[in-house]
Length: 561
Image 1 (cartoon, rainbow, N blue to C red):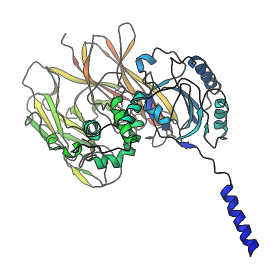
Image 2: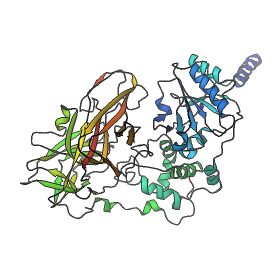
Image 3: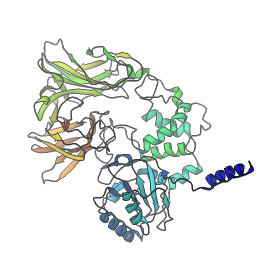
Image 4: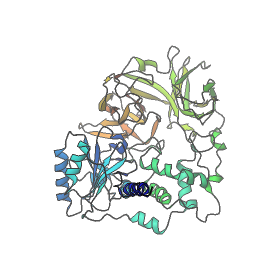
């Protein structure tokens, strides 16, 4: 019996002293634009076996040598399922980065938040990341083991994270250090950001999946808030902040992001504030007619929204009783159930037209677009002075609704308030639609698309809208100038089918007669697109959600000069 006990004891000791199973360190997902405005997200490189990043500091004396070595390894593994990028860990900004000539894209780390989260300490630090598992193969310098690590990733030989200290120029994080000495205050610094950018949707009865209506709620959701800020899922409608500007886009500055993330990293302290700004919020005023009682109120059909599942678009054609032409000068939507209405678009349509009108048949068509609704403030939209949207006598409105289910069945009855103008000399606002036909092959990560429209008369562009379906990747609007050069006026580098706002430009773009506007973008029909229902499927043009379309909408009016 003693021998049996001894054998069992030795076996247990053997298990305790056996080598620990190898494992890769975990990393969080993140997303950044590069210096040319392209969108990069770690989890969207699943078509690659690894994403390799090197911290870039143009002012570091050793950088020329480090970069040459890094680019040499990148060239060696070109075409072998390894992506090589640089990251601006100093947050120099696009203007500075555009002056640096490299063969590799440089990610813009606004606020240094991704670099500090990844633990980058020195210029020349390299990380080899697993995009599928969100884990780390290697952290260390370019010289030495990087070549072997990349080769090992390709053969599947790397089972444990390799870490080697670097020796490049030190990278400092001054804002992080300041916030570690003095944590951002919840009441005066953190809560106002939530109020301004999040609370309108993330509230009781709002479209957000959870409410941020108190400190306790923000604290509880703080890990997810951190995650979605770093991978740019929120705020939604991610646009390029360096190209044009629209109040319809949800911009967060680098300083606001630093305040939120550093506060969360400090364990989200409540602080000494006597009251909670989030608990003081009231939203009833958002449902009032902000310009007074409308001249005419359109009441849409009762749309039943299921408790669960994915709903396709619903449509409603509205007959109008007017016996003469009407000119709309302003509009305001009132969502019947804000918790499920995700977006809504309205066009003026002829008696024999549906919502899509001539877009079904024509690649280029001019239409009358009233406006769209998106979650957030139900602000009245006033058209530029001297302009309006015309409703010819006998025409109606066609509305398209997109709903999201939230676990409770409901009925939405949305209203649209129309404000008319008696000015007989208004300039008509129109929407130029460009929508090329195509066949999208399967398993294509970057299927380039382009369309254009020539404006024969001088025009003023006041807004743009990108429209694709699940495989949409990016779209930007570019003006071809007289010398043939291109000038970007607005860019959506991370298109999301769930968010399709009409971006009203803060500064309208005035174009002389003969100007050409290009709509440039791409589809991602690959496994790296998280919204893609089937990357193995060939997809053709169509207006339904299971089809694909590459449609740019350009809102404009004829220039008075």
